[in-house]
Image (cartoon, rainbow, N blue to C red; front, top):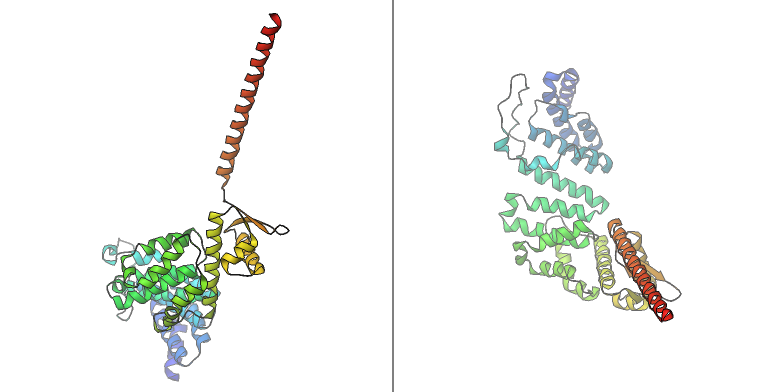
Length: 358
């Protein structure tokens, strides 16, 4: 094994900087990195792989390039270098996986570099798509970015080989539902939520359809009854794709339900006492005030709290065009009133003048 490592190092040293053997050198380094990884030297393997910038290789097959970059990302994630993993992952555009390989093959023009065929062990484009999104799920899980994790699972769900097999798409669809519920409320989350509810496959997992339906319905959700109903489903996730969701996700789930309830209250009330909100949310006064303040801070809600009176005033969000339009309509009403007042004054003056002349 040591002789093999020395040989690979010698060959890569000799071929360094020589364009006509750049692909062979990249394959040698990948093989050396694999040996280092098997020996438990993850850091050294990652450093070796990062020395090669395959995105500049014009004659390397596209699938081989993507596979090489994905291997770089994987090793960075294994060594918990999340910043470098993100930088490397950005070298791959997700749109590249949507290209039809059969339509892409073109005859090379005169003067163009001839693209080599990818080795037999390199996965197909759809398999690489699956690997890419699984790696991105690992990256986003580190930051607890639930919406991005959900979008990754949504992309995996769209792969034909997954969609054809219920044993594969059911665990993916379960994860999509969970991460949708865990995502903070925003336009993107609402759009994905409604799109997922329209999926016919959701009828095969009715409990998750009910969960999403509750979030779309503008009604207050009782956390205790919801958790009691979905507790077993939540714990069962450890037996499915992606593994258990963890204790942090359970806390975030409760937080999302509280945020949903506050949004429901803001829809039906313009003014409400803090005590009444606390009762509706099944929270203490301090907790209710904290959650309200957090939502106002994150700009997902417009509200003012009158602490001495213990009253919360909700307002609907208005964009700049809406504010200008309301000002314009107010000015128009004011000018109408001024005109009517002038007309009435003029009318009274004419009547009094007529009486005096008589």
